[in-house]
Image 1: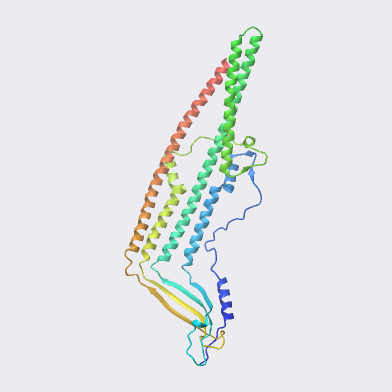
Image 2: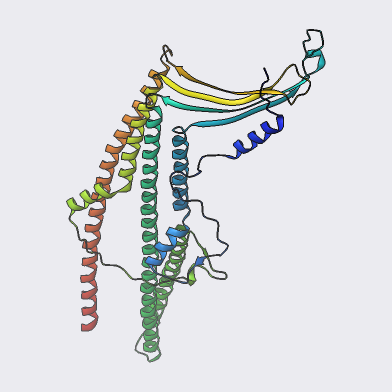
Length: 405
């Protein structure tokens, strides 16, 4: 009976086209990495807090790393989702054999010294004890955790930017105070010299005024240095360089101090923090991911069933030409039932359960830490508000004393 022939050329074409086929690269709608822009963005000369926050969101490296971790986790989801689809592989070989390794039976026909095999195989897992489902759920929970972690990074970085902006603003006020103090001392020195020239004062008063003025000048230098350091720390937190020819002393802060009055009670602030802090959302997502990993570890000891099939061909051993071959298909079911694994699955489940419990304890501890952070911030606000009110009264008393003088 004449067999259908599958030539090596046809097999090569088949392998080429199958190798070019793949599943969609992005099953999650994830954002692709943006191309680097050639435009150079620098720190503006005039900077307010809102602009600093916007620039930080665009250029801070920690935020960019958090975004990349989301992209990485989206790739994990693509990987786990791939297990739900059939797997298609194209295989092929072409080989030559030395004549000394060819077994001959004598007679007119001798085996060829070359041969080929080509096939396309398909396999699909029908039953795996929910292993794929658990892995997919764990990957989705991990993605949710990565997104919450990114929001946590954004909150931390923006808080740092605000703190450093206020540090620079405080340094600006200290410079102004030192300049006013030096101006007053300079006037006192001028007044002492005039009294001395008029014969109404003595040399000691002039010397005393000169010493006071000289002692005040280092304070101004330190305040100016503090401003440069604070602005440079702000610049690093934002993630930008200075414009060419500019330094921290050239940056002007456009904002003033915001309203320090709180609009929420302590209990309300704690509840809002526990409901909205992204760190807690990230840990809760980690707990869910670890819960699914426990399911996946347990599924390894359950039966697995796959449907397999292939179509291909191979060369004839006894033929006048290597192009002659056989072609056909195969189909079947492949299954495995774990019986004894010497505690391998049990150990993996125990590890997964321990990681789950650790994540749950971490969530409880993080809730306590966040509550403590809110209370600490509340106490610091009360202390600062009291000191600020007291300072206002001192200023009012000093202005009244100056008026009476």
